[in-house]
Length: 109
Length: 114
Image 1 (cartoon, rainbow over the protein chains, first blue to last red):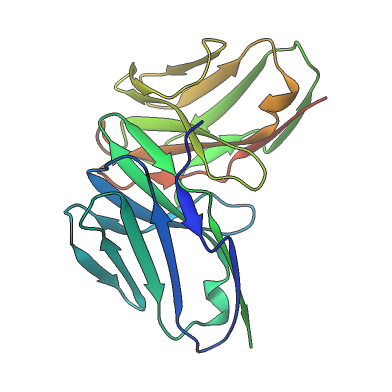
Image 2 (tube, chains in turn blue, yellow; image 1 turned 90 degrees about the horizontal axis):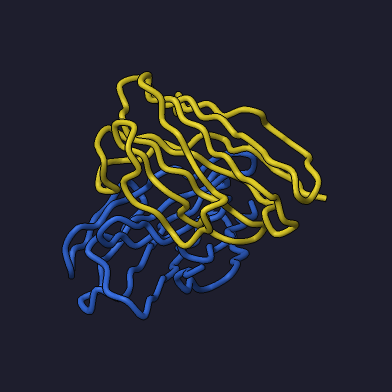
């Protein structure tokens, strides 16, 4: 099935560092969503973006809806140990939600 | 904790068998979506039910079918299981029949097909 391309695939960073990850698609989306998944749990919505060019923050998280509507970016500032997990982007069009391949984040103290 | 529960937690089946997975939505939510998440991959959308009717479907064959009940709980049925059906199956509930409303995911059912 179709999946969006996320990069990097994994990241190993030190506590306090900033993190950037992105998501690209060959298709245009009307909505971009970012989720975090912890082991043994389902994804949890972090940020939703509804308009091309939109920049939205949720605490230390900031996400942007790309102007071309084919990409999105997520930044995490001043990372902490509980940021560890897998981050997924998802694009919404009509009646489908398509997830990315995920970025695995490890934070070392 | 999202209030969305799934059963069973784990399940082992053999190729060719049939399986039924269950999902109990968050209170007040009338929409449920089902996803398949293979190991190391993102979730893949199977289908969505809104007020007991199918409201959208991903690229899954007809042997994947679903039901939503009047209390908005839901079932995912898979017939003629194949080895590639081994995955984590997630359900997500939301308030109205779209993906624009926040979806609350359950912890998933881990299905292994031998």
